[in-house]
Length: 304
Ligand code: CP
Image 1 (tube, rainbow, N blue to C red):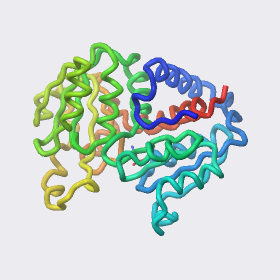
Image 2 (cartoon, rainbow, N blue to C red; image 1 turned 120 degrees about the horizontal axis):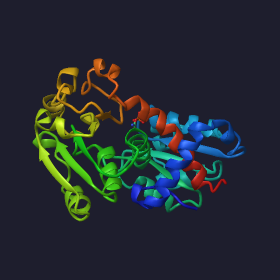
Image 3 (cartoon, rainbow, N blue to C red; image 1 turned 90 degrees about the horizontal axis):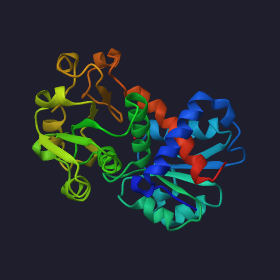
């Protein structure tokens, strides 16, 4: 059985297929309402989540299946010292597919090596978040009509932001993508993303600390939260947390068809007033996340 650990586990053809299925579900949800009758999804969340867990659960219910699981490590036997491998072997006796979030990088990969059922990485530490990337790609496709030929700015915590790392990995396979990296010096993108993804795939990119200087060039602006939970020092977090706050004034110089994206949760980095701007796409991303997860589960469960 196939798992999804890293977005690059899917070919660009498979991503296109998922986007087509998600678009079809959006148009015709009733046709899918019984597709997973009798199937069970386990959501194992060892780290907090609102969107990812609930969208997986809503997705399985809308496919006619059922859901079991836990939303915090302390309510599972992990609190008594059970290993990820033993937890997965156990849950595999009860479920057909598992969506798992864990603070340790690589934990979903370990899980996939200990079961015959599909594991979906729902976020592992500061590493990867492939289903957020699928939600982002569906949003870009629906807003821009293509996954090629645009300039995208990533702004905020590019060091710890796993959604940024996964989306850059996905976009590095498309044509005509330009990347603008906007962050404080302390939160720059990890070197491996630059060398292994951007440079290796000949993606044009620039780095800056000033959002205002580049905002007018962008077709997409992907804002991110400073990831408090991954900082070693609270003092350092407090110093950096409000490095960028997007508001209507800063959007004056932006393109009229800019798409403002954010994986959410937002803390302070986008003013609430921006929510009413036609360019705000982050709640569309939330909804798209449910549809693409429906398409993904149909694929991994090999449902026709
Ligand atoms: N985007 C995202 O992963 O949100 P949650 O942490 O609420 O799941």
